Length: 478
Ligand SMILES: *Cc1c(COP(=O)(O)O)cnc(C)c1O
Image (cartoon, rainbow, N blue to C red):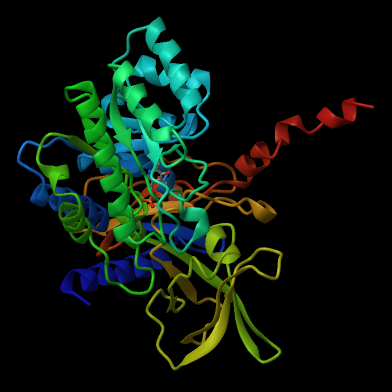
């Protein structure tokens, strides 16, 4: 473990302790998300440095964060503060990027199912668009004819390189639903012609896959994309394709504190695999999500009960499928480290005992870890699901009407200590007296300072979201 990862762990443990002490996690809010602000800033700095090290001076690089990995406005604003843009894939994600103040020139719209209205809005705003299919390109033809646009327009290609280890995360298979399948009969020639005939088509995009795809496969996809761009530019007789969007997908090590592969490893691999990529002729766009945030997030939950069944120890906690759907439903693909803390939020000592870590949902498979050796968990203890900063806070599963938990950013209180601007993210609804959301960004204790990123969903909000104000509706029909 390097010194940096050790300090990330120290920061996390201090935050857990402070979160318990200050009641961010308590009987009324038995689960919460914690985000390490310094860890996030360091991850973005590492990404930028990695590309600066290999790219010719003056190369324009837009690092666009894949919003689906953490669809939280304050997170997008923090990333923008570090120089990032946003990659969005729905009207909702575009609205979040705009709410975070990310400008259209720093926003990229990808999605295999963009409607006419979405495309029109993107072009009116000047948001970059990567067309996913021939039919979408035909829609862009009509829109570009009807009104001028500042949008950079491109096409997503599927290099059809095959899968990584997780099928659902592999976007460059033979039969993937994404992009123009490059190896299909006639596709390459069609695509080159499409660029030749459209002076406004200036970007080539590929995103080969996410978690489970080896970096070598991703780099191969970038090579294919680069070579296609070169072919287009030769056919046009000038540089028609000006930017390459190389997607995201760098895998995360969920097994230890170690950050492997690093952004530097990947940038160097790209430099070796596609040396001309960085010679300064092409502007570059990246779309990383998981690798930027995973290591900086923790789901912290109370242990409600500890029981045993058929000789198996089971800790019943408040972190289950509602916050960790992928881990619960596909545990082999999405294992998580679980750390044990005591009732005061201190790392729990004791002989590891194999036990199941169960969630609160009413189905038997709601387990985030099975037979996991951990100090024996007792009621009132806490468990932390580690490396959950990406996807786990943004893909809540509403099973059993469990509310979305609050999310809090943390930093050492030695940093800025002034209060967070009033009204920022706080709202004390009924049943939220003294709730964590009301504490704003004031210092909670001597060592760690929290700011709310998302308030815990209240029961009133949950009822409303579930048709509460429409209660009599169905009874009016016979
Ligand atoms: C999901 C996605 C990303 C981000 O993938 P990560 O594995 O989170 O880095 C980037 N680009 C596109 C098109 C995506 O769908």
